[in-house]
Image (cartoon, rainbow, N blue to C red):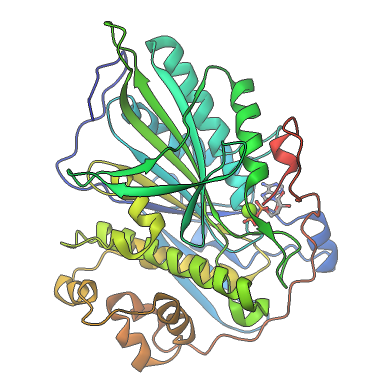
Length: 427
Ligand code: ADP
Ligand code: MG
């Protein structure tokens, strides 16, 4: 990839691998949730001791089960509590600084991770009044393109059941992935659509959103079953009229919701989908853990998603994970935050961490994730998970929680019109 010079501050090339930042975003309670809770709007997730989120390097995020005396705390990079404009805050504090690097040949990745209904799509796509990280990033990139003469293009694809589909093609098309002789990953035939204005962006992107796979589960009317990846790439035109040279790209990912199959009552294809989703989320967490701990081997090949993102995670690329939480769902939030903290966790015990990277047998990742979830409170199985599991030792088994009764917006159906506002379509 070529590095070009442009007319604004150049981020320094880091000699070492950038750490993946992991932050939490708590969404506000929805009016119907407050009604269902008889007006109780107490969040199960909050910061300890009124910490100053702005000035310290890390925060202790506290979770408290309203039904029992259970409580936990985890260290993360930052915490964004339930305010209407917290997505904008995340953009200006965490994402904006990744953008100049894209114009200097660096790649970056932002993920929204969390259970279904935790606010991932809201964080990434947003609404017309409250744009999410995707339109906010696009708009910033377009304004830099205007002043530098660079060209912005978008691709949008989904990874569903470990297969990759182009969402900008009229007829959804499977994309094959291959490594070139230099070990670079390529998505053969993936469309790249040039974007000059925000209205062009909304038009193209909303068509893609409508093609994302949606399906019904026992938990929620509409649930995202695929990882949706928006790629904004920036190129610079060549004076000799030849093809523009790619500089860098920003991947913005609305991950599929993590699921607990014991609660969703999933079966058949839904169970298989769910297994693939959990497996790829666990693989992503393993990759982030390996990067943050500077392990000699980063297990990119454990899933299609991490394999595709190999050039945008690690190396000189920068990445941010936004762990999304529903303030009324203790068990779900605990699962999300503990996995996020586990990814971020920096271990000093490299020798035992490295052992994790070289399993002697092929491990069933879904079984591993399930075992990890079930191991809460069981020292023996927690030890099997190595250094990440230390926080789980001595905890009581997870409590059986009631099924969700809320209907998250049934407007989330796939539509055919290309003119619909993307904010009306949830996945
Ligand atoms: P997910 O993509 O994780 O399944 P959604 O993004 O669809 O979750 O969010 C679940 C619900 O919460 C949606 O109805 C969404 O509009 C709402 N929501 C999330 N964040 C906010 C917010 N800041 N303000 C208002 N509603 C929100
Ligand atoms: Mg969603």
